[in-house]
Image 1 (cartoon, rainbow, N blue to C red):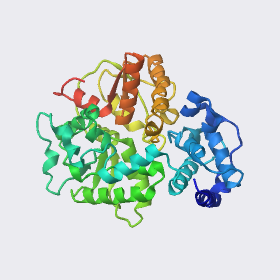
Image 2 (image 1 turned 60 degrees about the horizontal axis):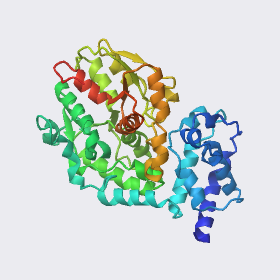
Image 3 (image 1 turned 135 degrees about the vertical axis):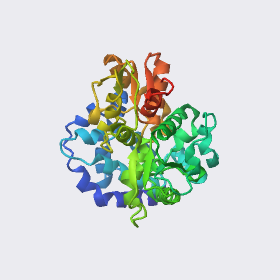
Length: 400
């Protein structure tokens, strides 16, 4: 690392440091909710520890290197710490600012740098041919009508990288379009014109690269004629709903209504466009970080579940804004896969304690991490996305 990088980083961080970190009273409330700290018990990986490191650089008492950078990338960006902070430290602002400064100073870890380069080059997180984004439609009973929108769709379905390109998640988009068609929704699929929403780039600290993805995706949606954009991925939703308006300050995204699958399904159920058959099971609902704490969507998924006859919904010990992170956020899996695999166990234990037969999620990443952990730990509990539940419980639908 060169001295120039250190000086640039210190200069960038100093402008906001005092305003952001002096509120920290070192009470330790954040330690009790931080998934990374609870697993590792390493103080410098805790939110409080990161604030102290940030302050030390701002005061020019600590020089920046790869070890320092690694502390800030060993984070799920779940914002549980901000939720409980009694003094209002804007930990999300600190983390985003530090990651941006690290990226601009050439201190992003190599694995995350490779992820960024892959997204920019391929248009997706897995380095697949982007034209394969509709591969999930291949084994469906009929071709989705969203192919033939003719530029006159009401809703554009933004599928996202994981559901588009990871076969284990194919059932989520399949279920959602099946439901749309039974409910008579006029929707469009974007297919190969869709790119990564840019959230992994934004989390890496590369907002400029994320901006290019945002511009492309808004143009692709505009081409469908839709005024509403729906997505099952909470990260895509958070990016479109909260970050795109900040990045696209030219107003190009104005007028687009951004909906998560849970919000749209709740509206379809309320208006009588979805009719459910009984499902006599006990389920619990897992609030994902990007949909819950970051976006404030809590009741829509529960409204859908309560609309299903004979279903019993029970809450885990930590729910709504206090929900535990599944371990799938913050690009941490790319940086420290072993740590991520250890994190979902607490959540599965809470589901067991609630005596639930199924964990219902509204996030393909949460489904993947919780399902994988249940298999590794040999825990007999099923994980389903809400879209799968709805499609299976509609009158005339195949059972879940």
